Length: 501
Image 1 (cartoon, rainbow, N blue to C red):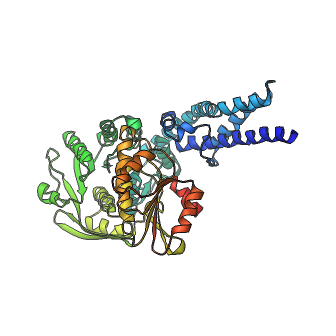
Image 2: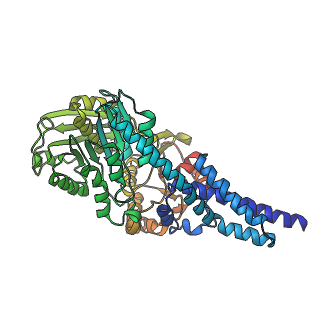
Image 3: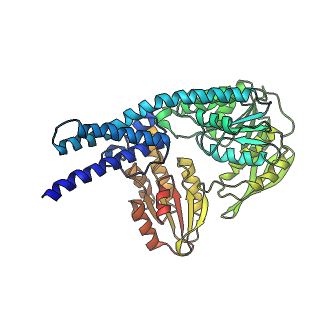
């Protein structure tokens, strides 16, 4: 009996510490933002707050402070009163998450002061740097890929600085400037992300771009933006703040971006468009070498991709701009990559490269290993690692690649976040699309499970759609995979399954 009364407090204490570690990592995933955390708490995962899926926090100073102070304050409950031990542990358990919230708020205050200091230093550094071309890149998706491709192409001719990974916040940009900007840099490629209006305007004021790129607009982060129109206006802040060359590079295949291109023309920006719709050449008659009046209703330069050939070995297509036609080859996967590469070529042209130079340099681009990268799997199977992020459009693009598989096709899918009122509809539509390709579907959590399954059932009444832990999903795949079978791992949580294999 004594052992029993010893084990209960011990195991409960371990649970409390484990929850603190999990909450700390969750705060990092949500970028220490209460608005994103609030949205998470309304999901199926978030509603199980007292029984969360275990997460191991990254070893970071901020994470260490949150864990340390949370344990100190909760420990005071254990030591500073004479309640029965189980009642004290119960109170500690209930207060674990609210305590991390309080600690995050406290830690954020000096963090924000540090951010302002670094941003001010970055602005001063930029203003004292020799004149260089600054290119801003934003959109609901495709930002990081476009930034990387553009930087690689430009590096064939210029000294290029780019923002790191997907660090697209004011402090992420500022730290790159302070730590990495050198006198020899001639071009700075800046990725800009946002969750609400005003955030991109802050970054634009910092770096003062002369060229702005809008990759695409979709339902991503609608829980934060509220409406698609708000998303469009938030992203358009990049174009509003352009200086110097005033070139807006817009995705002509995206209807919402096309509307924003009209705003740009109205505001006197020089609009360049790219897309895979060949009809745009004859319909709008753009030229890469001769710019039209900014008051024109057509694009000054148009970059068209056609005659596309794509496989697991890479992509090849013809790029047409004005009177110039070039063949482009790149070792990246997916037909949707045509748009990303066209955008990068257009950006390079706006910065001073010829179409021929940019197309040749495209051969050197590399995909992010977590963005449709292929890995040899067990038993001669193929893994597609697309765990960098997840959104409705990127999910469809990844499923198109999965469809290339010769035999059985498996999907490990993380339900999408922050889609607001579009969440049910978009999970159902992706479920429908997945059912047309896949033999087995595994979800990493049960958020929007019924919506996803509803979409699957429009195609198949019998297809298995399960929610499995990383370990169980890995065991299932080990028992099923054979030669030439393909598994698509989609979304950050799907990477846990990949690692378990």
